[in-house]
Length: 472
Image 1 (tube, rainbow, N blue to C red):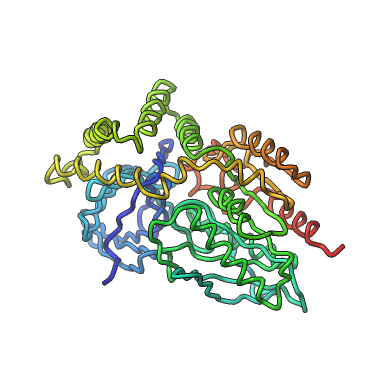
Image 2 (cartoon, rainbow, N blue to C red):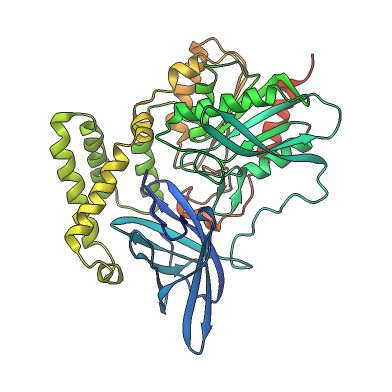
C-alpha cells in the first residue's frame, strides 16, 4: 500500500516561521522546502505553472516516494498563496505568505497544525552545497547494518590507500533523518563525510529507522538509537579497511546525546559532540521555546505565558492525578488554535468539534510517546561523566535550539568530574544550530541561508580527529 498521500506528521516541538514583507516574486517554477511540526520535518517540493490564466501545481514528497501529486484550490492573491492536497487522512491545507524570497505559512491536516516554508529553486534560493566533484578521490559503498530486527541502510566512504583507516560514525539529530541529515536542502552529513574522507578518515552514515529501507521504527527512544550506533561500530570493526581501535563518533543535536549513551556498550577512540545537550530534555525544550520565540520577534509577555504553560504540561505528564487537567489544557489549546486559523483553513474544516478533538488527541499522543517521555526525563550527565575518550564539543554562538550558555557549563563540569582531561571546547561565532553563518539563529532562517558551514568548522574537526587517531 502506498504512503504517498498520507502527509501526516506527529509533532515534537513547534517552530514558528516568520519573515519581513518583501515585494511579490514570480510563482512559476519549482519550489522546495519542508513542513515543520514540533521539530520534525517532512521535505517536499511544489511545481507551479500557469496555463490559460489558471494557476496549477503538483507536489513531490520524496520521503514517501510520491511524485507529481496534483494540488487543488491553487491560488495567489497578492502575497498570499494557497493550495491543498487531497489525501487519505484528510485534505492537507497550505496557507502561506510570500516574504523575503520565500513562502512561509501554516499547514493543516486532519486537525494537525504545523508550519511550512518553500524557497524557489534557482537564483532566488540559497544555493545548495555543491556535490562532491567526480571522480571522487575515495571509494563510496552502499552498506546494510543489521542487529536484531533492525536494518540500517547507509553509505561507507573509504579513503584511497592500503589502510587500515580511522573511522567515524555520524549520528543524526531528532526526527526521522536521512543519512545526509538533510535540512532544508543542506546535506550536513554528506558535506562532512566528503571532507573527512579526503583527509584520510573513513565515514559511515546511515538512514534513521523509518527512512528509506531502514527500520522498523517501533517505539524507539534515544537508547535504541544508541544500540543502532553500536551495531554500526561492530560492522566497521569487522571491515579490513578500518582500524578497529580507531573508530569514533560524531553526533549532532540529539546525536550528541546518543553518542555518550553508546559508550556504555563499547569503547570508542574519540567523540565529537556537535551542539550536544548536557541537561534534561525538559529544560532544553523550555529554553529552546523562549529563544526561538524571542528571535522571531515574540513579546516577552507572550514568551513567559507560553513557557509557564509548557512547564505545567510537563508537570502533569505521568501523574495519574493530573490526567484530567492535562487533557483540559490540551483541549483548550486546540480550541485556541482553531480560532487562530486563516479563513481558508477554517473553510476546509467541515466539523469544528471533530477538528478540535483530533488535534488534542494527536498532541496528547505525541506528549506520551516513548521517545518524547524518554527525552524529557533523560539526564546526560552520568554518561558524560563516564566518557574516558578524547572529546571535542562544538557549539554555535547563535544556536536557538541547543543554547551554549545552558549546555556548555554542565558538560564541562561533568567531563571534569569524570576525570577526562582530553577535552576541547569550541564556540563558533555567528553560527546557528546547523553551524551556518546566521542572522538571528532562528530555524525560520534555515531555508534561506547559504548551504555551507562557517569557515574553519570542517577543518577544526578533521584536524582534531587526525591528531587523536594518529599512530604514536
